[in-house]
Image 1 (cartoon, rainbow, N blue to C red):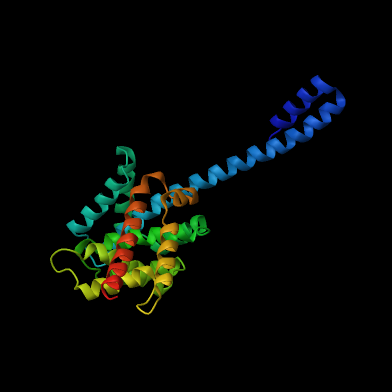
Image 2 (cartoon, rainbow, N blue to C red):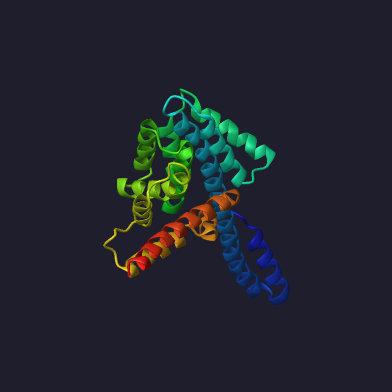
Length: 260
């Protein structure tokens, strides 16, 4: 317990108003000490969330990429791309690589890692979803998710409290980006991905589609995510997810306009 505010308040109060002032100053100093203590606890908690998010992101990333027995060059490039998007310093990039390599190790325990992650970050469901999105993004590095990787991702999703339906929505959101170019899905498949990414069906009204879109954009707003504990370095990733949500909405909106 800090006595700095109490002592300072009592001293200043006594100097100005005597013993009555000292009592008032002591009381005000008490509230100041409590306020400062709360700020320190909140700051320490936020730092713990950020460090845990960073560490677990890359260890689990290594585990997911190794789930099918090997880590491909495409997956390594995907992990490196994430590091580049995060604009990591040389030191933090080294830490990220070390964490990724620990996750690849045969004796790595993903369940324990996820349990600790949930203990620290579980009060912020949006952070859990962003974490899972990053894992799915890396798994899509080869253009599609291998069965063993999808099994690992589903196990992680369940440990995070993410339902199969929400997992499918996140998978569709990322598929809209990683399945473009040669071998890209048909227009119909792309539209289906867009609806699934927004979490609505084709039968949804325009108002329901817009409401789902706005909800997702709000959840992925970088400033809100940082306030909840997303490391500053991951702002670019949050912006990329927002762009994917925007793309999904525009795909649905254009389709509906063309059919009116």
